[in-house]
Length: 244
Image (cartoon, rainbow, N blue to C red):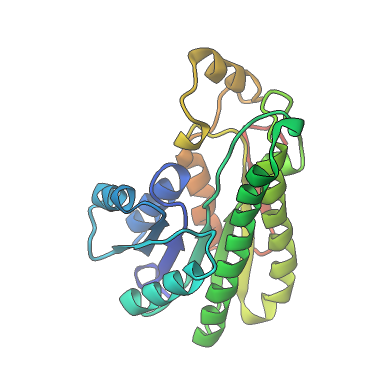
């Protein structure tokens, strides 16, 4: 299908990587459904893109089971089909391993569960459509390489599960021509890291072999490549300044 006919769902799309992916897709002629938990933020994100005929929003919490059907049906009702899913939603908190509570761990794992359930719903729709599709998961380079300066075992565990899901689904769904890939970012300066001091930014920059942290556009460019590729599946592409 030509680019202008394709429709993409992007979770966690109100800011940071998700919003940048959405802007990049729209510039490429792809319709987008922005998903997030907060209506005001999604409305602001859509206004930044300023293409009302190509963009719609679905306010829903990805960690709730009913969200999968809400997003899937909303996309089909608005644009008629689903061709691309970008599983970007997540949360992050850095602290020592022994300081994480069970409640915090459950919060991180709820995003893994939500990603799993949403992907199930989207795959079912893609199979029904019968012309394949592309799913791009946002993982992390630190699932395969720990980072001393930013202890984050709990959120990384959840992202590691998403990367394992990528590998397994890529084989299972290949006969349906549904490609499953992932981008594994390093440290990217987005709102999810909170307000950083100049000293923290310098520390994170110095951790990168290329000398600086990533920007959301670095990740969006890799997502676009994977969304467009018709002969790539099961790939996990590190976009991390050379850390891995």
